[in-house]
Image: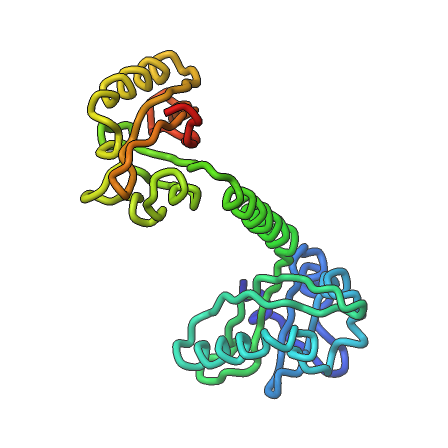
Length: 260
């Protein structure tokens, strides 16, 4: 966005009123900085986002509002603008008066050909999206921690005779004797090759029946572990389908059965 390229800031009268009114109606922050990164202009949304009035903002150095770790991001973006003369998109954190952090997406560009300053920029508050992502990552970390404590192998595989694994949990080691990374997408070692040949046909047929009927399944069969020992395992799973009903794969859990 380059609206600031088209309005004049007069030190006496200020910006043209109609343009100022337009900028103040926007839901994103619009601002400009001069040499030394001093803020020349901010629209009304700046006050809403930062909690700092326009009066207390103009004349301050922009980076004084940044989280200290993000100042280098701004400086690198300025260097790229100077080198390429193209706008740059960055993420920075603003620190409010109450020390609350706001994640913002900023697009900055030079306002004049042949000169880096003044810089115009827009700020969009993306804190809600970032927090959702942080919550998702925290949930995944918690889930992974839970899975690591379960003596079972959670899996997602392709629907082929090799049961090619796209994901297996760390419990794979306890169930099969193989570490998880050795089973995922490996052509030399497949989970299907570990299933006792006398049980392989039964496993395939039972899973295909469940997939065709879109039902869960529970199986009991034998595998040969990493040390060559035969183990009896129990598997519970169901199919993964596309929106059109096409089978995309299988997911479930395998754990060692008590009975041999």
